[in-house]
Structures are given as C-alpha cells and as structure tokens.
Image (cartoon, rainbow, N blue to C red; front, side):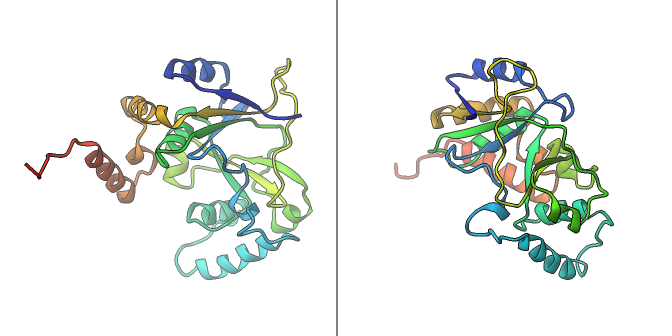
Length: 239
C-alpha cells in the first residue's frame, strides 16, 4: 500500500484537511513538516550519511552519553536520554512529530522558500514504547514505534512533541489502511507549493506560531527578531 498525497492549493484547503485529521493527544494522526517535499521520512540515524547497521547507532549514542555527563545530568530512562541527544542534534533513531498540525506547517514553510514543502500526517499505531525500554530491548525490536516523552524540555511542551522510534534506524514507516476504514492509509503527505509558503507563515504568525514560540529560549527569540527584520521593506540607498 502506498501513502496518499494531497496537493494543497490554498489556505482554506489546509483548514479543511486539519479538521478531518486530528491528533486527539497523540491518539490519531500526528504531524511532521519538511521544508523540501522530496526529503525522506527517516530519522537522521537512518539516512545514508549517518546510518550504522547492526544497531551500531546505539553504540554511537553510548559514546555520546559517556561524554554528555560532563555537561548535563542524564535521566535514568534510556528513551529520555535518546530524546535529549536528539534535542541537541545527535543522529538518533528518533523522528520528531507534533500533535499540532500548525507546528508542522511552520517547519514545512520556514525554510527553503524556493522549494515545495510537505506536511506528513501519520496515524500513530498502538505500539507505544514506555520508559521501561532499555538499549537491549530496542536492539531486539523490529518496526516503528511511538514514544510520548514527559515534558522534559520546553520545546517538547511548546511544540506538543512526540517521537517515532525506528528499529533499526533505517526502517521506514509501514503504510497500512487507516483504522478509520475506507481507502485512507495511515500515512498521508500534504504537498505544499513554494508559492504558498509566505501566506502560510503569515497565517501562522496570526495564530502565534513563530520561532520564538516554538523555541522558547534566547536563540529562538533572536531568530524570530531576525526574521521579522528580514521581512521589513528596505529603504533604497541608490537614489
């Protein structure tokens, strides 16, 4: 079975789609934005430049964790430790999603302005991992699982974040029929043309979805102010 693609033609269409596909606090569809529609739906550790077969990505994470304790205390939960590493940019087998479709829209439209973007909508299955999972249990698992983290990081709260955990890291999402029935699959791509990105960002700003909201720290505030400045019409200096 193949995922469905819906080509977005205007802002009203986005509203209609999101009314039909909702998260319900992670039970139902969850959302992920790609600034380029052609990007693969894989965690960083599953992409060719970072992929290590035979669960060696967990060995890379182990080496990271041994050095990370010099900078931060680590949770006793292995999955929370992985989430921390993901949060700080390490290539892990976790893939970020949001329960808020507007958050996914922001990430789909805030970069690569000249490229078509995409919002992926995925019906989270019943296979949800808990914090009792360890490195050994992850090594034994096969498939894609959900993980709803505790509110450990401010970004998880503001972005209504959750993860899929890919075992192994290069294991893609298996496309199946939706539990809602009909011909709808559990994975749908909203294809967003590049020319709609500015209008979508303006709409999201009206709803309070911007960089400073999604990244509630000084880095996020600075990026937001810079983006606002870039949108201000510039005075001509050649007259």
